[in-house]
Length: 297
Image (cartoon, rainbow, N blue to C red; front, side, top):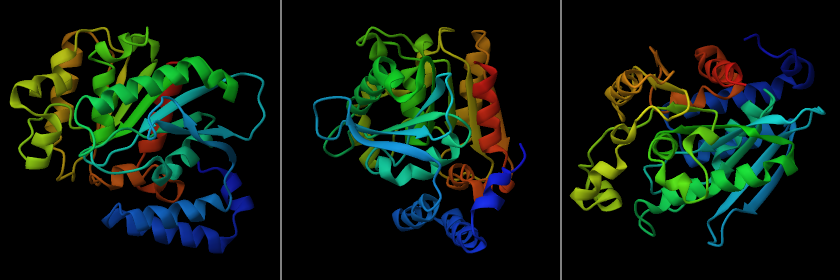
């Protein structure tokens, strides 16, 4: 996908250099400081409106941000709900402005929810929050210019696990009168879809051990899932690529139209930061996701 001429026409060179420099910092560590600097630079020339801290439930953390493209269009826009990662114990929706910035430029209404985290909450509390956020989106996104019949989910790392499990274990959405097929497609980046917790903190999040099968995405694949695009970096040393491979094999076995892409130069962090426009040239991640979603419209 060609680089938007709008970038060259509207962004002073200085701003572009600032954003590029901060983005390079993110390649080594997806730190909160680096994300803050990147997001601050991107906000200088953002091309969307935002509705912040919209409640999707009664708990104080059940809030989401809604980003809407400024470009006028009579037709309702496709919707992307993005679940961020953070080992199920950290992260906030504000840190992922850069994801919303990238996809609103491509014509999506983007929704980024917060969700319950360890140690205040354990599995499946964050799954229930994710389902509630999707249900809220289905019921309300038309008020923000989105099409409730064209909802996609994406997530990175723990967020990819959350999104993937929502769309395979139908119990979470069923509580809201929905099914996985009410979502048009899913893209997971570096998702730990099939792992057994060994780190003490993760054993606390998902335990006791007899509960582990309930958190493994593969165990619920039955052919009633929407199409999936699973993306992974070959240099990811945090989540093994076998998670992607095994899930693709299971999905293919039940006839699901899903695809896996392995990016040779990307790590667990850089597959995420490649979504921001200064780093697009390093990977086709953003373009691949956009083409996949729009092929399902």
